[in-house]
Length: 326
Image (tube, rainbow, N blue to C red; front, side, top):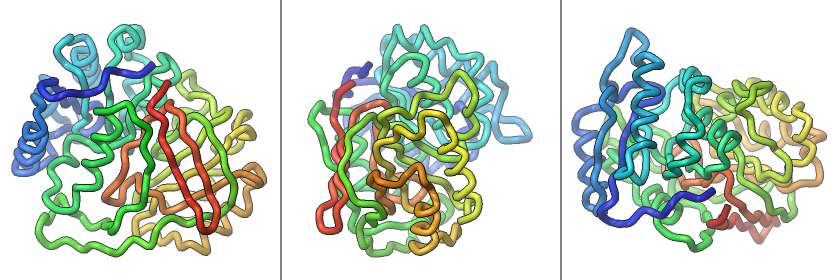
């Protein structure tokens, strides 16, 4: 199920289903609103978006209220999450998935929001978007690639290819907007060669694993699995988290794997990553591409969870094409 494409004049609702937007700086909020309004969109906010407790989140009831109101409101055409966090999975048992199925909308965010996105995918079949938070739109410099791919994913029906960005950065831009460090991007890394097509399923790896054994985890059969993790991961934790995912019964039917670029503090080198992938019998014989532009390193592309994709992974010929279909 594919939600209607965004057009100028559409209303975008911002909600905080994980961490409160109270942690986002005022200037960052102003820039995000201004950037979206310059694109022709109207920005509105959930009523509880700035509420917070000692964990800088808020009650399940308040977060569910904002989520349900956003989907139920006929004026709202897209929903952006304010920011990630740690506790989005608290909401899953309380979500009215029939409401979402009856009111399909663009729903975009990443990191911890993966829990809600995969649950929506499993329960409704609605394509959601692993892409920028509302707070991401408050990035002053180096946002062009992220914006380009967000618009490709949510405003048109044409297939698009995810090409490497010219540069990347994992500095804490939300702390210091002007003193940025950008590094030239050497492109993707082909770990296993091959070609495949399938349904995009994935997001933040450690969040995905929170859903194992629950009713909220979508099938990995015939999937293009895309995974990433943040600075809290390292080679050993990534290895075991990936292995845990691959123990799932239908993991043997994964068609290809895309791995998002790691943050520098993770210290996962290309050599370490190759060794980890080589140890996975389940991934032998299928294409695996690393250093792809998604996850916690900026800039990043928007990936439609549940949509079909085509992957070509040869040493001198790499292609990741997103089909804009159900």
